[in-house]
Length: 290
Image (tube, rainbow, N blue to C red; front, side):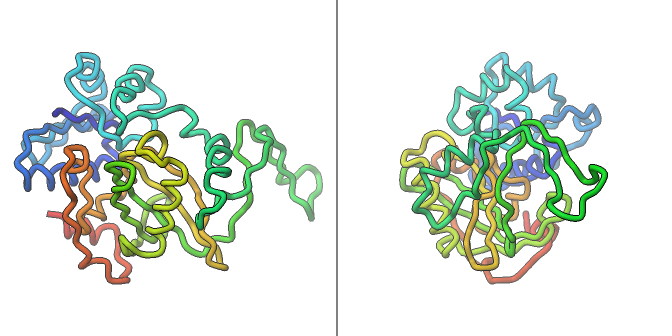
């Protein structure tokens, strides 16, 4: 199988590459991974693995149009913005997306009634999307007023803890849940604490996923990740989701996460030795990756 990963200059592209290397090194699978990026310089980078190839988006588009590859879900925008890529992605459930997946207001409204009895709650989401935001005190001369179009307006959560949860789902019941607590810098995981794969948060995620998608079809199917938080009273809240691996999902390789094994229907070999309650830098996990 030939896999194409778009936006591969990102952390998600790096995670896809590391997962792929680990998988083919262990299984000797004959898959080929084509890491693609719009930056002209990206294709001149040399991979350390003979089955990994760095290419420009124009070459990746030709491969997909010819039917020579499938899309591995690590990108955020290409599957949404390029009609040909969206069409090819729709041919496989693990890469298929729908426009409303990335409309935060629509997604919150879709999830709210389905998860009403779940431990993970959806923040209250308001009907208006074209808004004028005014400070409620100490305002003069129209200062600090914001006019926003097509915005998702929802309640502010007093966040105490933030989490990212990668999920690999094989069928209706069988899924591997890899939760981690994170501190963020510029939108990226800076410090990371791996959480138990069978702990409280994992159990809540399992309940949440099955409430929304009892079958392994649609929004929470195959490969995806959730961003969650917890407030000061211990209540868990949904922030957002993406139908792809998370950017820094490679940290879960020490626990046995293997999306390419999932795509081949191969069991995951779980390792809990690093789930020890310790905080680590993202870079520390890279040093552990062989």
